[in-house]
Image (cartoon, rainbow, N blue to C red; front, side, top):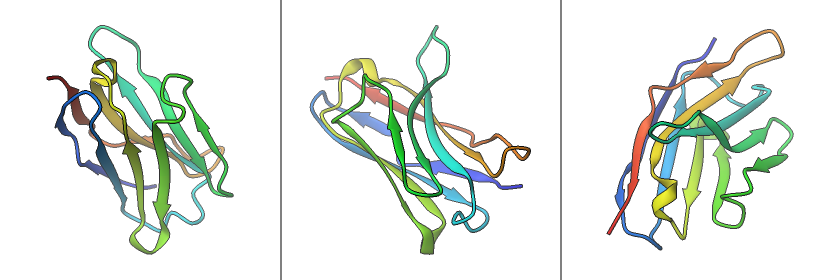
Length: 117
């Protein structure tokens, strides 16, 4: 089991940047994968970025080249660096973890990101 706490959301202007953090309650080195999902008003939750235990990454087409997922094992934290933000990036962003095939997924409480001038 793992608890996840997101932080770093807020208001950004188009073209601006934000960095989200997801702090885990245990070591993340053995967690199968961690990810960031997002849910815009009236839309389904969708995968934004994923990072596997072995370091492979996957991004939604809409964020490729603008978002970067990374981790700091010493801090048990996963980050989402978001650059060149667009209004359509506005959503609640959720941290997600699957510890193993039969353990998870676990979700954080979400953090609001609003991109507006």
